[in-house]
Image (cartoon, rainbow, N blue to C red; front, side, top):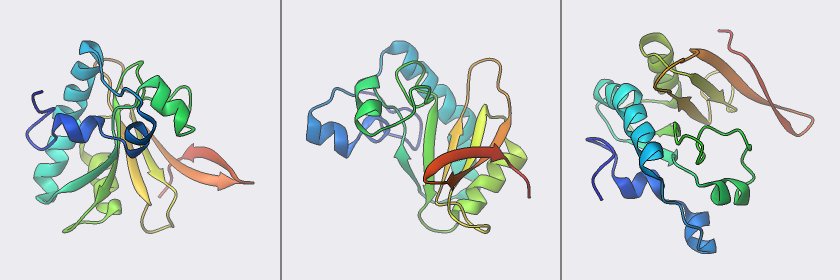
Length: 155
């Protein structure tokens, strides 16, 4: 299978330990694959060029069965309905906050989420992109009484 983009292999974009352990098929269809390539082109590759170091993709495409197995939201943009989201973590040469700030300040997105962490650095960064109708919605994920809540991003 061809790469998703210059810096993202197909295997990396579809790999999941949970899918492997539970023998869940995590294969995107042609539409989902197209959406994944678009997200990589419009968000990941410009970010990767700026950071100039590897960036870990902790979650990209998730089949509906995989998303359910990990307890993901039924409306997750990672899932089979579109395959248009990824979760990112800095490896070296940058921080998760650098990733978040660069995307926020320089790229068009549908959603950008500062996922948990503290006031200085998110635990990871969620980003999605759609072919049409990107909302440029910037949020922060927090825990309230043990449940995830999304609030509008404020510096």
